[in-house]
Image (cartoon, rainbow, N blue to C red; front, side, top):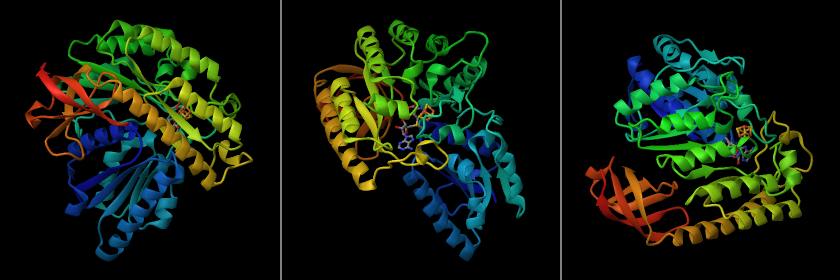
Length: 441
Ligand code: SAM
Ligand code: SF4
């Protein structure tokens, strides 16, 4: 067994984990192929954030498993949050599953897969959430040659009552700055121009160090590296957001003025039940500071509708928050009860029908707001790094404005990896279209 395919579900951290795993698998002698090429092994990097994300993986593994019973291939490895949450259930249910590894065991996966490849052994790598065996391997096998993710902190200790992440990704631990800088050395040598710093709560970066070195210091130091052209980061937790972060952003034009600041609800009562640690007015103060200090800034957010006990009044408060803050984009979701979390045990769970009714209302409103904001940008000029081909649209190239809005322009694929000036000609609620004005380099 030496060929494998990999399927990645969920957040950017999973993309980052998969990229490092792909790099390590190449060193271990495995070759990556597509599913259609009938690999010996399929690796699933999984997400547990909502029931739907898990159902997709479960049914896909079921499909492969019935194939395995008939033809003897492929074997399946399950990595990530679902692996940590459901553990041996995968092995009990599917004969083809040969390895299960939670996110904090990634470092042991390549070697374990080599062993599994040679015999009929089945390996289960699920440890204490405080332990961490990370992959010491930069993400050199990326789909995007010019932009790269770097996780700056593992896990989360916030225990928002709806969220499974603290249970699957374990305790919060910041990565040492030297480790992050070393990874950047590899990435810039590999041609990367844009770095995206990742954490469930980047603002708490360094809270576990004695040195006093915090997120704003890291942000400043990464942006002052002359070899890096652009720096972005996500996610910012409102309860830990401090003004020094905005000050560093304002002082360095390489740090993109785009902040993902999840509000989750517009009702103080629900925010308290969610254990979020801030009120709507405290949230509003942060938004005010950000908008006062940064000239053109995009604020995006996350919102959950239908949390247990959410009344019509609470829901209307969330609708009002969308109208008040006019976010550039909002990742909306219907509440999905996750076994083991406090929210799943709460009374007054809403029906699926009611949750989706509320979801449709907020989506319709937010799409209108996002469209209005984007339409107001027509005629503006932005410096954009063209970094990929869009999934649809022949002859088009894709990049992002400094404010993290997707822009599509007509152009030659030879321009990929270059900064260009784009003037905005058309807007949709999720993206902009533009005209290429000049090549910057
Ligand atoms: N750490 C970030 C924060 O503090 O907001 C969010 C990370 S979480 C992995 C991504 C998003 O998934 C959350 O912002 C939330 O809106 C959504 N989410 C998490 N658990 C959920 C659940 N049980 N049901 C619906 N949406 C959920
Ligand atoms: Fe989940 Fe809350 Fe941690 Fe974000 S801060 S990962 S929502 S527990």
